Image (cartoon, rainbow, N blue to C red):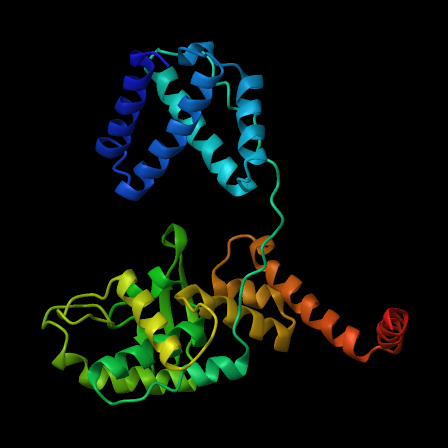
Amino acid sequence: MNPGAVQQVSRFLEHLRLERRLSGHTIKSYRRDLECLSGFCSDESIADWPDLRDHQIRRFAAISHAKGLCGRSIQRRLSGARSFFNYLIRENLLQNNPAVDIRAPKSPKRLPETLDADQMAHLMEVPGSEPVDLCDKAMLELLYSSGLRLAELVSLNIGEIDTADGTVRVTGKGNKTRIVPVGRYARKAVDAWLKVRSTVAGPTEPAVFTGPKGTRISPRSVQARVKQRAKAAGLPQRVYPHLFRHSFATHLLESSRDLRGVQELLGHADISTTQVYTHLDFQHLAQIYDKAHPRAVAKKRRKTDDES
């Protein structure tokens, strides 16, 4: 592409940084995706952005898919391109957005990973009585007991959790507040942590959970601690904070069958987001069927006989 088109990408990235104040990580993703689009344009002998047409954007998406990029990643590329072209339109450098009606191919739904109840109970057996041990145990218990997102856990302040009442007030996505129950094991763990918190936290620090410097713990620190505790517990799979939320939802749904109730506890605006856990439940039922149903057993037996 010509130098002017490349400079327009640079100015757009500066716009994202200075005016929209997006994070460095997000801007890096925009840069990478627009570099891919620029490379495609060069391969197609397209010198400037106004020369780009919708059928060529569609071809860009198809080539990305053929190279093995999943639908979600292609959709992100197209979304970045639409934002960039809208910026060019506002700057009077482009008349129409060629990516506006282009959609990525659908990706197969990925079911969330979970731990079973026994694995979760084993993970909660955090040894030690040092403040860091009590803090870690309280965080793990609360993540699983109340199905909190990582950001919700980190942002909790003193006064938002009431262990006597067994509730926690959570501010979730879109600054929406919800009240979530706290189980007895989590209440006990949080109480034990709060008794020693003052030996670690700064005198004016409002956060429930703090790091070694006495300030609010960072999301990255929580991720590292969860990983460390899972490794110490001997769990073979990758364990991360959101896995507790997936397990919380799955275990509740298996026991209660109350999809609406689980939706409220998770703070999902749309019940379709919660319905992914019904697929997990069906998967569990299908395994029971395969093991127990006479027809399923007979089918497996016939297959074994045929192979022999």
